[in-house]
Amino acid sequence: MGRELDKLLEGGAAPPYCQSCYMPMDLPGKFGTELDGVLSEEYCTHCYQAGEFTTEQTLDEAIEANIMYWKSQIESDDTARERMMKIFPHLKRWKKQ
Ligand SMILES: [Zn+2]
Image (tube, rainbow, N blue to C red; front, side):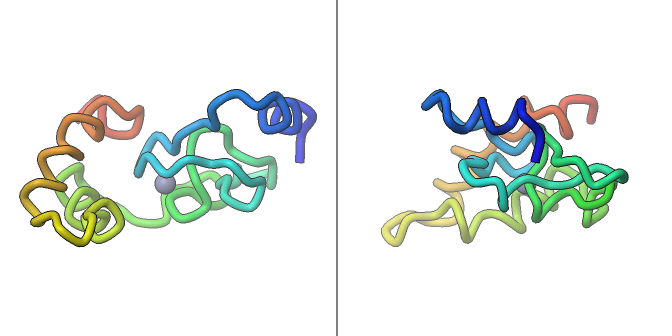
């Protein structure tokens, strides 16, 4: 784990959010990895491994795949999806689509 990440996580600043699924990366184990094994500062371990995304997804597919993690018990899929639609299109991975 690099010094930069150490500092980032120790500093008490808000953790970086995965730029694919918006999961907060607040532990070293939650970071994805680059091809050379260095931890990615932009993507989480579920989305990004060894320099590549773990799944080929469109923005819509990513939202559908993550709804279950975003939805509270009293929410419908639609409510969760609406919330995600405000965030996901701004994440680095989806911006260009
Ligand atoms: Zn992710």
